[in-house]
Each structure stands twice: as structure tokens, then as C-alpha cells.
Length: 150
Ligand SMILES: *[C@@H]1O[C@H](CO)[C@@H](O)[C@H](O)[C@H]1NC(C)=O
Ligand SMILES: *[C@@H]1O[C@H](CO)[C@@H](O)[C@H](O)[C@H]1NC(C)=O
Image (tube, rainbow, N blue to C red; front, side, top):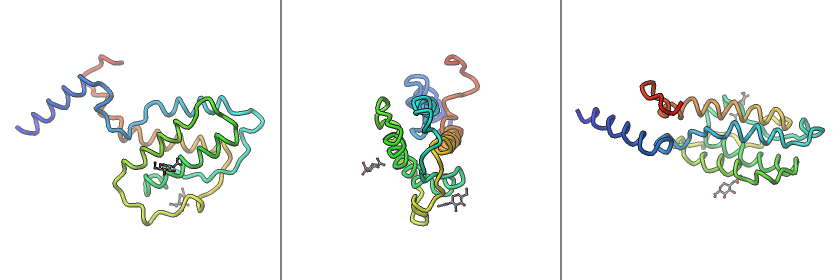
């Protein structure tokens, strides 16, 4: 009974405020932003750089630490590629999202111990992790019964 009410209320909220009711770890716009960064990268330097690059496996074990690492390394990459038009919003979004995981990361190794990769591989890995997050956290926004939005 209560469960049904809660469900009804969340359907209502979902309809009322649309995507705002979704888990804040759902980062729907990020894959697009990442591809914009890729397009802004100076062509000759796309495979330059050595950035500490987490994997989806690292994300599964240590989501918070992994996102903080991506955030810090993204700042490095922006500087290396001299990208100023997107400012630091992407890095900040990752940093902010890292705090939404409750999992303690005392057992997580430091970013500096991860494999170093070039800018292209770094962005590919980041995209994989964001897609993994989105498949975990964006679900509620796409109920099969309501197709109004898409
Ligand atoms: C992440 O946010 C914290 C707290 O605001 C800040 O101290 C830290 O420098 C940020 N890290 C990055 C990589 O921006
Ligand atoms: C990150 O994942 C790689 C394999 O994907 C693994 O070899 C490495 O030990 C992991 N590092 C941390 C800090 O979890």
C-alpha cells in the first residue's frame, strides 16, 4: 500500500520535474561534451600526453576515487590541449559527482598508480565509464509506459 503510494508519487514527480528526479549520478550530457572536447583537440596532439587513466573495472571497485582521478586528469588534458572554450565544467561535474558515492575508498589506490594513456585513450575510457554510470543511474528517466519525451 505504502509502496504503491510512493511509486505513484515518484511517477508524479518524475512527470512534473522531468529529468530532475533522476539520480544525480546520471550524466546524460557528458558523452556529448566529451566528443566536443575531442573535436576541439589539436589534431597533431590528440595522441600526445600521458594521463593517469582509470578503467571501468576501477570504477566498479572505487567509483568515487575513479571520478576524482578523471576530474584531475581532465584538467591536465585541457591545459595540454589548450582548450579554454569548455572551461572546467566537465572536470567539475566529475568532481562533484564523485561525492555522490557512499562507498568508502580507503582501499583504493592513488590515481598516480594507474596506467598512463594518451589523450585519445583517456577520453575513450572516460566515455566507457560514463556510459556505465548512465546505464546504472539514468534508468528511471526512461519508463517504458511513458513515451512522451522520446
Ligand atoms: C574537487 O573539489 C574539491 C572540493 O571542492 C576541491 O578541493 C578539489 O580541488 C577538486 N578537484 C578537482 C580535480 O577539481
Ligand atoms: C584498475 O584496473 C586495472 C585493470 O582494468 C587493474 O589492473 C588495476 O590494478 C586497477 N587499479 C586500481 C587502483 O584499482
